[in-house]
Image (cartoon, rainbow, N blue to C red; front, side, top):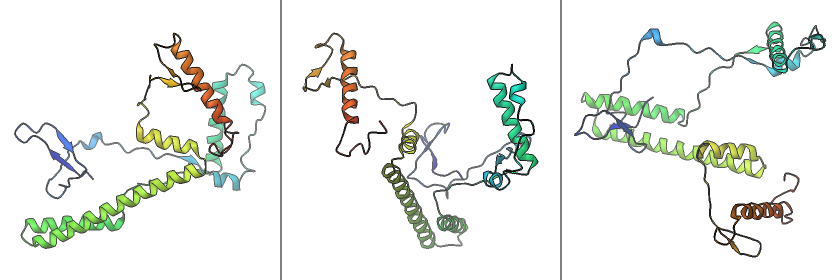
Length: 240
């Protein structure tokens, strides 16, 4: 579904459009698309190995030639890995442990909200044909807008709870994956500012000839002290 699109610059040719998340013109603008049926391709379904079925029939999942690696002494590491992968897939298909998962579409809006949006659009069609009053359409639109805001608020609260669980459970890998996803992996912040040493002296280019080496030493000592933290802020020194 394409939503929240309107043309900017009506005095000029509408050769481009702007997306606005706070403006809803899906009722008032017809968006059409045209393509060739020959150009459409059905994506192949991804097949995966069902681990649960594999554990139930683990005795059937055996290799009949366990000395292939010893026989092929000149086989390269990459070729050996590819051969083992092919063997695993062939045996899984033979014992019927392959599975094709169904497609799942994650949506922010709930089914109740989608029904209200559908009802709002029906009211708008009737309004264009003078079969519905403006007050009924306004109520339907207000109900849909409130439901959309509630779903987005609930989704945001769910995301915050997930982040809090990752922090409390010390799941730093998932937490940093979330940060990279929302900040962008290509964005980097490089700071070349003065730093303070242990005696609170500012280290700058004017003060030291080997400024970069001094900064590296200061940061190394700083993180070294953090690993010896006994206040509980670092939780445990084993992870350092």
